[in-house]
Length: 450
Image (spheres, rainbow, N blue to C red):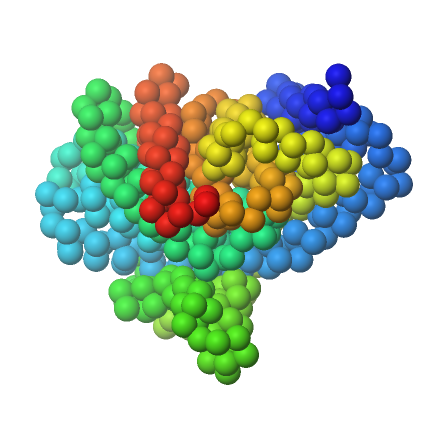
């Protein structure tokens, strides 16, 4: 075998080891990624000191951008939930769409609320609304719940500032604002096709009983003073508009223009999310009756759960650096350039394989971005923003028993194992396939691959 083939075999064995460590032996993802990076680096012939430096450099480079974004996003999501802002948005969407279009309204609610919050956080925030509406209308639970989880899942997998897409943006050198535009263009039709249209078909087959935990959520008392719809919408959409504004300024204004410089500063993900958190501390905090100590507690208690996510992202950056410095990236470039396979499809396949093996969308996107980064660097015609979205699409496929989100949906909705596999897993697979098709259509329309 050639040296390049040997390197690719070493990488394949490292990825298999990663899957076995996480899936079979339940090793924490950060530790598994670190071990896999070490195995790949040593197999590629790197000396231990060089391997250690490469891993640490890659970890630090990625976390320098991603860590503050994840922390600020967690704070924003916690304030949004504690104040009732997410519930206010969901109820307004239901009123706007009408009772007959409640599934469509909930899909949109998941899509909107899911922009700044993690999938699990959005699920916890909005499920009380689902159970309340189910009791009021007598409609099948899954007919309402599945469109909601589809909306949350699509945004979580495709759109910055979520950890996986942000890591891919950093590793592939994509533009955050353009990636967000592409994610929204692909994500909204994906939600509409896989949520309100597919969910009723799946819901007719199952009628689960509500779990005790979800019943408790739906019966919880709201705060005496809510944030108001306007305050909640301004807070949740502020970072989106700031980042999109920076992209528009880059297109419309000349480099060095004062307005463009200001827009680029305000549209930086860290600055945009910081602005949203500061606004939330007022609009979703002080105005809703939270004193300073309560607001501080809300911001502090949300950081613990995201620590593991931050470490996983960092380890993915370390793995990427090891792949590049060990020569694996160059071997991947040679293989792809000779295969004729579109990098968008290749990236989707890599993310899908890692997702099925490890159960983590974040690990799947990060690992696939690490593998595709040299390919993107060597092929300037590749639309890197669409590549990020393609990786996110692949990371949604075939959620099953090794995925934490699978068990969250199962327990919160009172499903058994077979019901979860034939509803949630089907929805996630449909998301992956529809999103890939839309990425390829959008790429053909804009001429991303010339």
